[in-house]
Image 1 (spheres, rainbow, N blue to C red):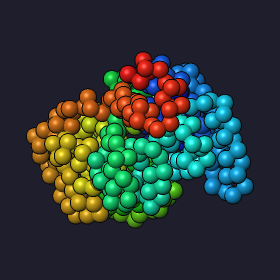
Image 2: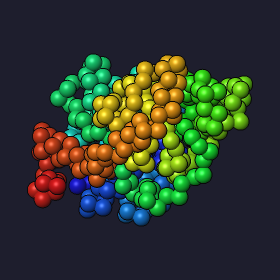
Image 3: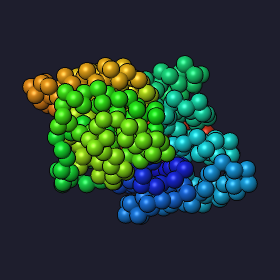
Length: 370
């Protein structure tokens, strides 16, 4: 099978969408498929090269003149690579692939990673729309995407070709008890509420420290908020880390206080590291935490309840240990190989059911049985 993945870029900056695309592209290539990626480029080009994946430069920045150039460049890529499947991971890619294809020259698949964005409905231009959680699938149906187009392929990052085995990670030395989050520095990640919650428990746990791992456009704003608290010297902004698992391995409590979250990929990594987890009860997060079996769920945007949950775990070593144990159960379902296999199933089903006979003929029976 010939598969072309479309992303805006392939920079190694902690972008979950890009990371998922890289994982499945590498594993598809490892399985013997002919895989290519079209993007504006980035640090993952070396990873793709190691897996024999061709990279086509494609700048999809949304400026009128550049988009005209992108259309021409995209058509040349399609002519050269002749994909059976084009898999778009971001909005611009699905527009290019959906509007500028000729009849049934390829099957078009999209993945909805951030359904909270208004533009996510445009992912419905694809023949098949992959939702990364059941919550996302239900949301897309409510927004008008036909259910027959939707397929749920739950996210997973474990055993990723992008990173080393967690057993080979050297834990960072943190001051304990350590409360950690790994998230982009955006308000929607609940960073303000997390800082507020930490301030509420600061006097009760004078040895506790808060570590915020990640970067983003609002980081300076959050640092300013932290500096105005009585515990500024115990709130640490660590920036983007290529191996955030090193922080998770040394953490007592991992918190993801997001206002919205399609799946919560980072929670799978926190579970693998054996963290006791507190997370917002929104969107796909309950699914990622086995519906309250693998972590404590709290309402989003509520620093008071979050503080109480943090205090409860830090004051009760037995309960803390129990949640650490629960986090590490049932992890096999977060394997990237499982994600790759289920994604290939979506491709094959689309090609088999396609009305375009030429599409089906271009894929041999042996490949369809993958």
